[in-house]
Image (cartoon, rainbow, N blue to C red; front, side, top):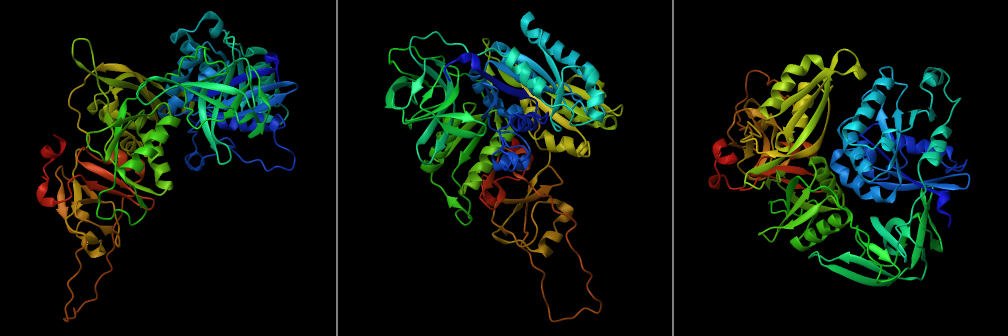
Length: 623
């Protein structure tokens, strides 16, 4: 396709769980992407196992639909703030955005983040009010809140004059007239998403050329094929690319110095629905895939003339957290997976950093430790889970905040805006918990979208204060609270902040846990392990009810004698075990502890395993 008027490039941005992927499902279905004999699955764009298991989008993905003679390239983006880097790097590929907002919840932290990025790129925004069929929907109020957000973020008059469409993505219909919503809810299936398709064609401008005399493509994403190797994904900004063409890659090396690599294009692909279709040429404005170089990185520019000026590299906001990854050194290393060496661990982390521009890799003074810098605990948890499923064994430390220093030498730390939606009866306990973590309440209002019994609280709080807060928040609200946050800026350091006020129950020997030994420890705190689990000296088996650590013997067996008791022994069992998921372990650990990760197990341990070489006092643990 050579006519850019027949191409539209658009992304879908929203807060997590506002219905992006479901909307893409119905856009594909109603555009005729699926044949009549094809089986259509829900959330078809969530292709990763982790995405389907967790119900969230993790990676940005491309697809396309055709409306008449016009091709609409669609990019589905993550909604969780930890994966904001995925949103930032695809903004340059599109000319418009569908901003999805829940008709009941309204604009939330990630809505603000992605909208600010879209406005700064000059994208044409279409406001999509989704889930208008909810009984607690408040469409008019949400539209007003969205307009206020546009103004607050400095939108131009043209950007603030956005079109609005009301949708029920779950049922596959939309309307431009809010007065028709009630009738459409009563009579499902009488409408479709055609008004949204028409709005995209009329509102989103066709792609423009960068003005270069040669061909240009900025690489915004990477993929891999077992047949042709690394695939570079991006939008053609100028000229065109053809199979067999000689091109140059403008990139940077590990030291940040510019490099130029010449290679021949071996294959060209474009998106047709969910499939990659081989094509002889990629035309101006189209989003496509180029194969031929194994060295391509995100942010590189491909040109047909070496003298052509490369496009500006993709820039994303800097990381705010760091986590140490290291070789597994526990006594059980290598028994459940591949005990990798430092070289292989480093290679795996480098590969991840190259594919995710929001992550950074820092070498450490120790040869077997590497520091990954990222956005949040969930982003680290996803990387750890992916490596687990690849068969690796390794250890990770507690996430730490990355500080800055201002001109006067004072330390600054990242600050976040946390938005909480919870039943009003838990307001006092939640407020007290956030204030202990240096949070400042900046807004308290009724959460009209969930009924009169709920409130919405907004806290300005340091990132340190949010580490490990999610599980405590859900416990206080009995699982009924909603929680989201995003980075706002750096602010003055808030002083000492206690992370965990209780100690750990630590095995003082190697062996296998025994139910009799665990029964004697139940009064000491909360157990993480049941009977029959291998343990070693220094491994954490539970949480102490007091602030100090305690070395215990979970392998103690009952002494047997040949004297028979006169009464029958009562059957006594463990009252309960706290199952520690990966995310919960990341929230729980302290500075002197590691998480041991294997394909089959997640274990908590002390950095120093020998009991006679470490102190159990809390003051020694946190200092």
